[in-house]
Image 1 (cartoon, rainbow, N blue to C red):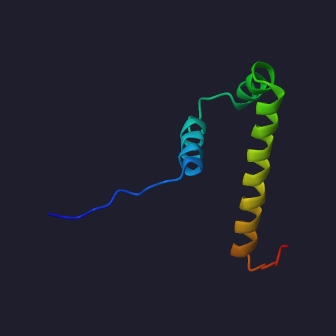
Image 2: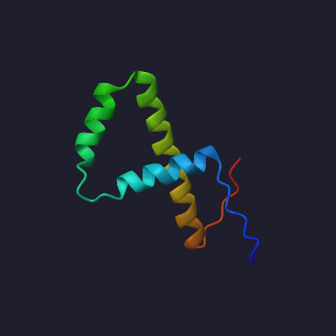
Length: 75
């Protein structure tokens, strides 16, 4: 019998995976989703959504810089 311990993900990792799963539907109209986020949620939720998107862009830029051989010490 194998003793396999299931991977334990943080709450943030689980949310990120769920968002990724939802956005993987290529039939989904992302413009409409953006409109609904802006219209149907409180401003605070919209700002938090912006924060998540900005963090993702910064992380992706760092990954691409590392792949291209650029290493920066960011303070």
